[in-house]
Length: 221
Image 1 (cartoon, rainbow, N blue to C red):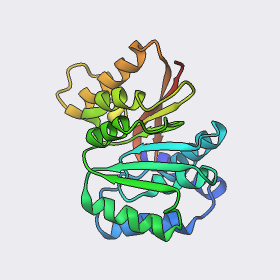
Image 2: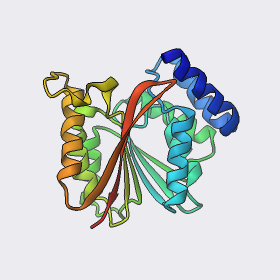
Image 3: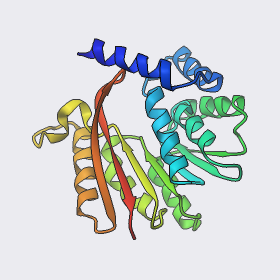
Image 4: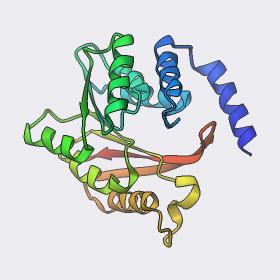
């Protein structure tokens, strides 16, 4: 099935996604350094862009920069005067993302913070940072429940929260899994459903990146 999923994604890429030298540069730089190929696919990047534009988001928060591929997608989607704040734990990835964002000419739209995401989030909370309109959670999965709790303190009614990679190759439904990533996303999904402040859904996906999925949430209050 993977071969068919990939063929269909390539067809979608060809007909729906225009070539972008800045994005291709970021991916190539990441692959040249043998970073994990965890960046979103082209269609997923376009989905983020469309969601940001449809929601008229100006302030975006990203957890998990990697080499800045999704960061560039989102920075290009926000209007002039908007800002993407992106959090990355690893110094080498942070430095490459900074380079890729400068190469794309987006340094005035993007603020990168290096360090543990929970610590960076708490710093933003303590600084009474202006709430974000769109939040993309794509960092270490065991900490997803904590990230949700902290991100809600940086949201407002109308904020959209996108939680990536939650299906875990179908293991989300496995209550007996000992995988910390599966445990993290299971608790994350349960917390979404238990909150009266949130309306959420989840979708499974297949494609060039395999079998996975995401949650999409609207903060109501």
